[in-house]
Each structure stands twice: as structure tokens, then as C-alpha cells.
Amino acid sequence: MHVAHLSLQDFRSYATAEVPLEPGVTAFVGPNGQGKTNLVEAVGYVATHGSHRAATDAPLVRQGAPRAIVRAGVVKDDRKALIELEINPGRANRARLNRSPVPRPREILGMVRTVLFAPEDLALVKGDPGERRRFMDELLTARAPRFAGVRADYERVLKQRNALLKSAAAHRRAPGAEVLATLDVWDSHLARTGAELLAARLDLVAGLRPLVARAYEALAPNGGAADLIYKSSLGAAELSTDRAQLAEQLLAGVGEARKQELERGVSLVGPHRDELVLRLGELPARGYASHGESWSFALGLRLAAFDLLRADGDDPVLILDDVFAELDAGRRRRLAGMVAPAEQVLITAAVPADVPGELTGASFTVSGGQVVRD
Ligand SMILES: Nc1ncnc2c1ncn2[C@@H]1O[C@H](COP(=O)(O)OP(=O)(O)OP(=O)(O)O)[C@@H](O)[C@H]1O
Ligand SMILES: [Mg+2]
Image (tube, rainbow, N blue to C red):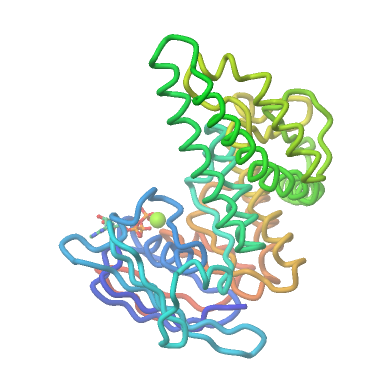
């Protein structure tokens, strides 16, 4: 699929912007702070209903404006659709598909699929486990939008269960039978929704492993093998991807942890405590990999995500925000060769020289709030 038109109203620095797009490579070039990333962030927002660099929607709305609107005309298998998202910070967002309101924005998740690589992705390698959990869960949602619901369910269960544990911990004496019975109920909810998330993540990681190894090898041929290991908070237990079995294992796990959980007042077992360990050769990437290696590993994760989504039958839009300037000449050339066949690639760069010559296509100059086709 590809985006044929992007239209913004009060999104980030733009009062308005109209950007016609084509399949193939499009580069947005201009000095720092001119609004290049804002454009590709908007495309990412249409796909994920979130930003890769803001935890909430508020910063996406132009300073002083009440709301932002992002419209994208998309083309998939020669069929056109118009998606419109209205961003209302602090209130419910609204969505329209082909000008008709949809009951909930979540229902049009998955209409546009993107894989976005940005400097913030360095945190995938160097950051907390939460960054890598989010990577997995967002990819699950991109592949099967119903995971937005699974994630929301799990978050809700976790929040309620933590509230109960916290109040029990605050009382500093053995919890009564009523509290324990309520906790039993939350345990089973946690096991059931947690198992669904865990099974999907295990399956995802199995699919990603060879793709990440291949992408990293292609980017950095002499760089050692990249690998992923899913490390569950259930400890060393052998994990299958059978949901019923995982639910039993989670239930046993929270049972064992109960005393400690009641003391500490938080849920200590479940997918929210799991880690995706990234390895480069014999060493963990986190804490060991060089800056360039970390950058290439993060890029390898995104390229693997692209391959996985592509294997589902449709190319996602590939977005590369400020990537090439960070890479040496060899990696730059190899990356250009890898991304060139994608149906649509959107690139941002501060100077034209940062767009590799192999990637010919349209280019826009972004400056002073204007996006002008060269
Ligand atoms: N909500 C907002 N309202 C108004 N302006 C905003 C808002 N959010 C961001 N900006 C402005 O947008 C500009 C940043 O745009 P953007 O991140 O797209 O720059 P860029 O062209 O990608 O720059 P760089 O080359 O440094 O990455 C900043 O000047 C910032 O102040
Ligand atoms: Mg930028």
C-alpha cells in the first residue's frame, strides 16, 4: 500500500499542509527544526494512532489550536480510501473513513501500516525493557489490530490487580479472606489475558529471529550475529505457545509470587515484566554494543518488522527519519539497496547529500512551514 495524499490541519508546527505523494522514494529535505519529522510522524499517526516521539497526543496539536486533523488518502491494491483522524487532547479522538464517521478510531487501525525508523529507536537497544515490549506489542497490533484490545484488557487487569495489592501492602497485616478471594479472581484474569499476549509475543519472536539476523548481516556483514531471546518473568520454565498451557503456567507463577507481591504491592509476574534480550555475537547488545552497532541493531529490528508485515501480503509504508547521516558509507549503500524495492519509502534528511544516490525519487524542500516539491 501507499499514501497518495497527506493533509494536515493544526498538526505540530503546521497550520495547514497539503502533500501529494507517490509510490517509490520520497525525500523531505530541509534544515533542522523545519517540520520534516512532523510530516512523517503524521503518517505514522494514521497507522498507529500514536506518535513515535510523544507519549500523549497533546504535543501533536499546534500550540494554541483546539484540535489537530490528519487526513491520508491511501491506495491499497488499486483501491482508494480516505482516512481522517481528529486529535482532541484530553477528549476522545474521532475518525472518519471515506468521510463517514466510524464509532471508534480503533476500528480503522490496520488500514494503514507503516514501519518507522527514527533516532528515538536507539532506545530499542539501549533503553529499558519497556521499549522492547512496546516494539513487540506495536508490531503485534500492526499485524492483527485486535491486539489493541488484548493489550488494553491486560493493562486494565494489571492496574486493578496492582491497586488491590497496593492497598493490601499498605495495611501491613495478613490480608483477609475477602481480599484473597478477590485476588484469586484477578489472578485468573491476569493469567488468561497475559497468556494471550505472551503466546503472541513468543510466536512473533520466533518469526522475527531469522529476519533480524538476516537484516543485521546485510547491513553489517562483518558485525557478528544478531539474535533475540524472549526472557519471561516465569523464569527458566519451558514455554510453548499453547495459550491454555501458558495460562496455567502464569497462574502457578503468580501463586508462587503471591507472598512477595503482597509485601511489595505490585504484580511481579506476567508479560509486563518480560524482557526481549538482544544479543550481538556472544554479548548482550544493551550495555555492550557500540553506538553504530546499536543503531544498526535498531534498524535491523525495524527492517525485520517490515519483512514480517510484507510477508503478510502487503508492503507497509517504510519511513526512515534521519537515518542515513548516522551510517558509514558501506552501511548507507547497503541500506539503500535493501529499502529501494519497497512500495513506498519516505525519507527525511537535513541536506540532499544525506539521501543516497541509489534512492532516486521525488523530493520536497521543507522550510519555513512550507513543503514544496523540487
Ligand atoms: N505542538 C506544536 N506546536 C507548534 N510547533 C510545534 C509543535 N510541536 C513541534 N513544533 C515545532 O516543530 C519543529 C520541529 O519540527 P520537526 O521535528 O519536524 O523538525 P525537523 O525538520 O525534523 O528537524 P531535524 O532536522 O532537527 O530533525 C520545532 O520547531 C518545534 O518547535
Ligand atoms: Mg527530524
